[in-house]
Image 1 (cartoon, rainbow, N blue to C red):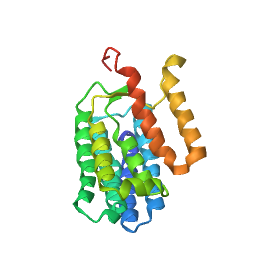
Image 2 (image 1 turned 120 degrees about the vertical axis):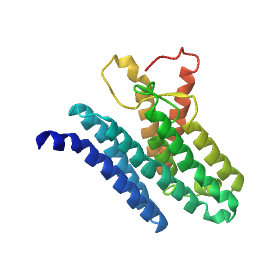
Image 3 (image 1 turned 60 degrees about the vertical axis):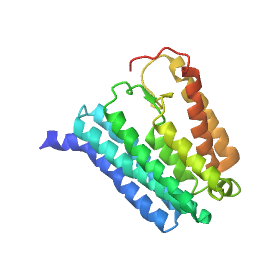
Image 4 (image 1 turned 120 degrees about the horizontal axis):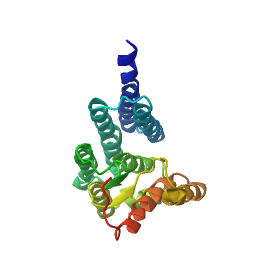
Length: 230
């Protein structure tokens, strides 16, 4: 009995991620936006630990990989999409349905990620969890920033379009996980951490979109590098 239970431990964390994602969706529809964001952040923590435990216990497998993507689809694709839809209520027009781009492109990215062997040490395109957390964070951001994005139909449509396309872009982005290697490998991690902490101190929840933008911009240093096989 020990071996089967051991193999399921990471899956319990993955299913916890999924459960928190569903709770986040419920909170969004109740307009309890801060609660919804907290659920997604808690899910992100579990999302980190399921992979860590799978490697630690040496029980990585195809089932866990597929479960992880399915859970991420709900937590970081569907929940953020609904958040954007609810926040864009002042628009009161068909442009609100641009929110569908987030879950649709998240689904495509996750499926693509599962069959792409190059994304073990870095990512091609912005990862779904980072994108989802950034979209969710707008539920806690105060005006005038939220008003600018969600009460202007052109800005909202552009926001949804750009964020969705970045999910499936060819940008090569660093993995934020720390692994063994020379200290210089973590230069981007340290810079991004400093940006995140500084923006948190000055702008509160707006630090999440700021960090997201800095993370995307970190791909600029990779544009002229020869592609490596990860």
